[in-house]
Structure formats: structure tokens, C-alpha cells
Image (tube, rainbow, N blue to C red; front, side):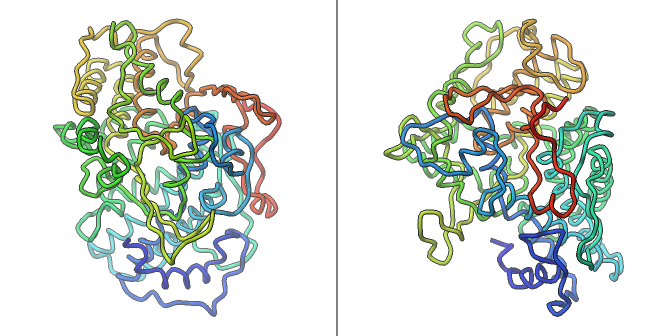
Length: 509
């Protein structure tokens, strides 16, 4: 709960910077000027810059991790996301809430950078610079990967990006432009490199709630994975994983043994700062811990069986379909919901006696970066470098650590694929048959690992994966490989203020 200690300071500062609900269009009011006159206050300012809204609820519903439950609770946001509709209402867990949280955090990071110019460059000041640069890079990265087209090399020079804000604004109605995706990525990379060059864990009281060094390197591995810079992915992942990755990977088999008779308490270990796989956590105001269990469009028995028990290693006899659902400690949705299942990764803290059917002041921990993701990033990078033995070694480490098993497969089995699979995953770069075989396994494990955490949506975009629903709803149209609905529409207020909207009613090529 570190970020709540500076709540009063941040509230006043937000009033100085402008309304969080209408970011980019409100005149700052100098009458609310709050002196931030020492290093500790700048550190508190940065602590409050981590996103206090979650992208998990609105992006998870857009993936193939979810289906329609019987007697599930109906919410407008959940339905709109499930059918890939635009949604611009203001509430917890909405796209608008996350957009505002990111730009609010960027404003605070920029304010910190401005203030830091007045201090001598001590080691602590350098560490604060690092955190500000890393926050600015991460928040823009998340924005561009939700509200713009996925990165696609040289073609990204033509794709609309998102406003990259590098200075605290002191005037109303500043004319922002979106630039291009490529331009946004270049600015992210510049901030990321600056942050990594200065990052220092020494000054964090709770390092896993800040961009510690391993979290920074984990973010770098994700960034370069999206860009297709495989050597960089490996280099950053190597630092995070160390010489013995199995010591820092989440052990689901042990989780299952410890929580099989108390499944709803899984979150106690899953979100713990003592869990080696957790690298960066943040506290969000969210209803996700309760909604994922009961809402009508969520994970069902059908998705659980398909994702966890219906996939494996092609040509590996009994392991063509691995039965891994047991390890992930699934629990059934509470009555009257039928067919619903979930993994209790989240718990909520309710403040101020939150009541009502859709209360606020509910706080849920989100894990933003993990070693599990980093290992999967490295496997993908090794695959694309043609270093198949190293990729398979990492896959074996993953399976041995998580599931305490070693499939009796030949190494050739891991690179098996069939010609008909080529249309299923199509990144912007070319892939061989062997790479296709390994990539399918990586994508399957990533989907298993991050259920309820929305990372599947980014793979659906990046690999141009089509999604079909078993639905007769009037809103339903299958999500095609190249589909404008894979890019969320900008908030209406941002469009009214002059930002070009994302295209609608036509496929994105």
C-alpha cells in the first residue's frame, strides 16, 4: 500500500496538472501549486505514477480465454469487450480509466524529471531519474499497444501512434499529434535505455512496487520482443533469469499441493512480493477480483479444457494434449453461475466500507512483469534466432519447474508443424516450419500462464490471430486476422480535442 501514503500530495498535484478525467484538455490552476521541495517528495510523486487502473478486465474479455457462462452477471463493459465493440464510459476497469491513469502517470513522471534538474546528480537523484524514464517508457508502451496498430517494422512509419508527452504542460488546449507507431517506439527506446543506464535498487523500501533493475530488464525483454530484436531480448532476459532460471520460475505443482483444499486463497502466494517470479506489482482500483468469477463473459469449462488440456507437442504421443488444468488450481464460479471457472489470482481490499452492486474503493494487486514472461520471451527469441536447442532447453526448464514433468519427446517433436498451421499465426516477419512449431508451443504456454491477465490479447494482435465465438448474439462478428477491432478507439474527448480517430468499418491491412 506504499502509494497511498502520498495520496494527499498527489491529489493536489493532479489538480495542478489538470483533471485526470479529461487529460490533455484542462488548464492547470496555479492556485493549487504544491511545493515538492525535496528528494523524498519527488520519490513519492513517482510512487504515485504507477497505473492505478487495470487493463486486465477490458482486454481479457476480448481474448479467446473467455466464453459465455450460464446465469452469469451482465455488465455493459464486459459485453462490449467480448464482442469487440467500442466503449467510452467512465468507470472502474474501463479503457478510459486506463488511458487516463497512464497519461496521469506520464504527467507525474514528467513533473519529476523537471524537478530533478534542480538537484545535484547524486546516486539517489540518478535513481529517481531512472524510475521516471522507465515509467514514461512503460506507460507509453502500454498505450501504443492498446490504442495503435501493433509494431510491424518499416510499415509502422505509416501507422498512427499515440501522443508521446515529454514535458509537463503549463497551458490549456495544447495541440497534440499522434505521430507514428515507429516514432513512438523510438522515443520509448530512448527513455528505456536512459532508465536502464541509471537504475539502482538501493533506495527502494519496497523494490517490487518500483522499477527495480530486474523489472526494468524484464520490460526491455518485452519491448525488444515486440520489435523483433532477438539478440536484445536474450541479453536482457539473461540478466533477469540468471544462471539457474528454475529458481525464479513459478512452481504451479507446488501451488496446487498447497492450495488444493483452499483454492480461493491462491492469491496469497501468487501476488506475494516473496514469490521470486514477481518482478513488478502495482495496486489498482478495480472490481476484477470479484467480476472475473461471476460475469457472463468469462472463462468456462470449455475454454479451460481447450487451453489447458487440449494442446501440447505435436507428434509427442501422450503429450500432444497435456492435461495441465489441475496444476493451475481452478475453482468453480459461485452459484448461480454455471460452467464458469477461474483461478483465484486476485484479492481485493475494500476501503471506506464500499457497498452497492458496483462499488468503488476496491483495490486489487496487479502483477505487471514476471520472470515467467521473460523465460517465454527468451524461448521465442531463441526460436527466431534458429537456436532451437537453447529454446528447447528453456522449454524443458519451464515444464520441469512448473509441472514437475519431462515429456519423453525427441527434440525434433518440438519443431513439428503442419502446413495448414501457417495461417494461424502470422507475425510481420517471416517464419520457417520449425519456428512455427516452437512458436505454437510458446504461445500456448503464455496463454496458460497469464489467464485473467490479458497478455493473450497482445499475442492475438502481434501474431494476427483470428478469434471465433460460439455465439448467436446480434453483436457477434468473428474477429478476423486483420481486423480494425484489434485497435481500441481513442477516448471520445481526445478525438474532440483534435486527435485523429482510429479507422472503423474497414479492415486494417
